[in-house]
Amino acid sequence: MNKTGIKLLLTTLSVGFVLGCSRDDKCDNSNVIRFDTSVGGVNTRYTRSTITTESFNAFNVTALGNAAAYFQDLGVAKQSDGSWQTSSTKYWPSYPLSFYGYAPASLQTKVNISTTEQTITGFKPAARPSDQIDIITAYALANHNSSGGRFVLDFKHALSQIEVLAKNGSPSKYTVTILGVKLGQIPSTANLVFQTANDGYPTWSTSTGNASYIIKGTTPITLDGTVRSIMFGSDNFLMIPQTLTAWSGTSVNNGGAYISVLCRITDELGNLIYPSNPSKYGFAALPVSQTWSPGHKVTYTISFYANGGGAGLIDPDPTNPDDPNDPDVDTNPGNGKGPGELVTPDSEVPISVSVNITDWLSGADDQIDIEF
Image (cartoon, rainbow, N blue to C red; front, side, top):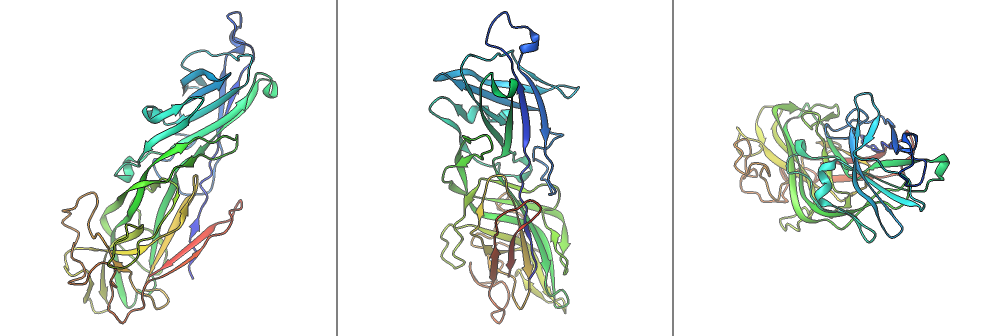
């Protein structure tokens, strides 16, 4: 069985505040808050929108202490020489501070950091994956005596990164050509709650409001027996972490989640199997129910016609969510067959899903195998 990695996206952005005296007009420049940053690397494929060492150039930070805000949404920007500069000078007070950092700064209108609430409210990934943003958040509790006036603010990725790979398990019998991949019926609006431990991750409220997302190519990909990406470029999906409820896989659409591949399938003689219109492509779907965790990259590998399997199920909503009138998409791909019915003839084995999720260890992969 082909193994596919859920590769942990665990890049930590370490930001050191160099602080040294009480808030006092007599403090000199040597006691001004200063920053050093570093980004730990991981061996994984980044989506274009992911914040990396090179792209991390600004963040906002709020400090709470003594039952009040000490400063709010202070901007911190990287300078041309690689140093960091705050938008205004701040000094240590006599009491400890809780620091909450986030990026990008464009989230500011959704951020609420006070003594009673530390949230990003009503977040929803952009409709187009190329417009989706990576979110990083951080927390630290420190005072002017912390490690000689220095402490670490560790930023963690708050979203889940989703990549889809595919292969053809029987290329001598079937030709499978791919033009796109869709995440269907994903609950997509939720509130983030900032972490409350220096090395912790943020948490999310229960997501609501289903939405579907598509990455569509311009040049079709013909699958063979080698696993390959079907993301058509450098973008992966950046989704809200959650435990998915799967689509029922039947004609009854329960609103559950699924992955759907926009494909065209012919047999070894060139006869069209799917969709019904030979000049178009049709969506072939499979239910998914995994848990997406903050800071994880989840990679699905979809195997067409592997181990006697088939090509999935007819999509419960066989349209392009970005363009319902997409001329490349057959919106009646089953030629009379409805959602949840087999894409391939009735003699084919129904879809099978094998999931093996293990505890993540440094240098190891979690694994999810999905076969039609």
